[in-house]
Length: 138
Image 1: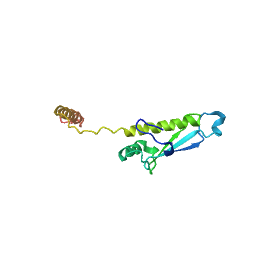
Image 2: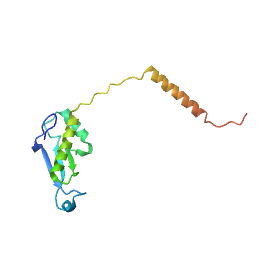
Image 3: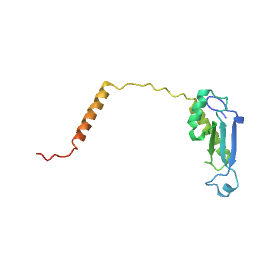
Image 4: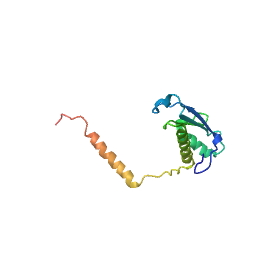
């Protein structure tokens, strides 16, 4: 398996096959077409610590507590196509993990935006003040 950055050896991937629900005719009850791909991201030395942490974070619920990424594919009717689908989804995840997010630079609000906010607050306060009880002393 290859990504745009580096190759993940086939030995690092573990595949498990099981019966999938959904369409498939008579085959659905007798052929293991669904695929569960497991990749030990935490134990892998293929990526540096930063990329590994991003990969596990991006995987979200697909990552176990031990850092193993589990991808289940059962979209297609054939085992081979589901296997390819799972590998492609892992590739996409790894590619996204290699992209370092641009750090956010904190900015201060402009003077005009602060003034607009205060004017808006004053208008809103006036509206709320006008909702008070009507006095009968007139």
